[in-house]
Length: 119
Image 1 (cartoon, helix red, strand yellow):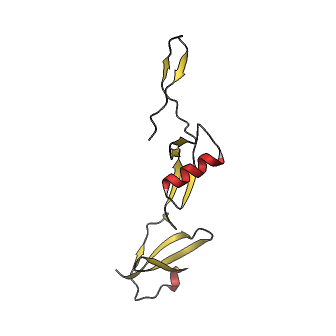
Image 2: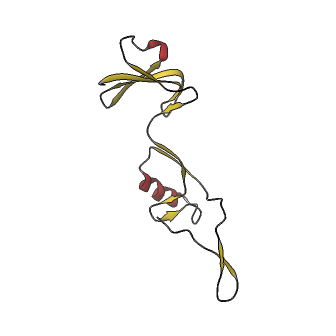
Image 3: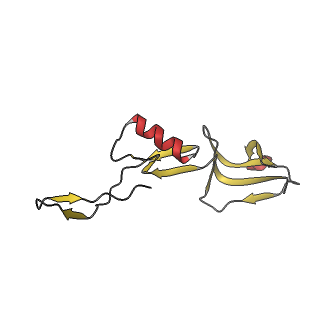
């Protein structure tokens, strides 16, 4: 399928939210975002299911860490830059880890959080 369109109720191009729109694709390149009604009749169209948004790029909506750093350990701009560099997505949302980690007792009897292994 060389030239085709993908249509959705909402298309977000990174700046504008388009209502009832389609993305025109030629080969591996997006050539236009148009209202769904303006898609040429001869062009094959894949309509996405109701409620699905079509967005540009890959957006990772939950990133806890990357690049050998965890956002919980160092919630700083430098940490975010390292995470962004490690994930190669077009957008990211740093997220704090909210689940409780198991505890262990050290030699003094004090409870310590166990760190999850870093990936």
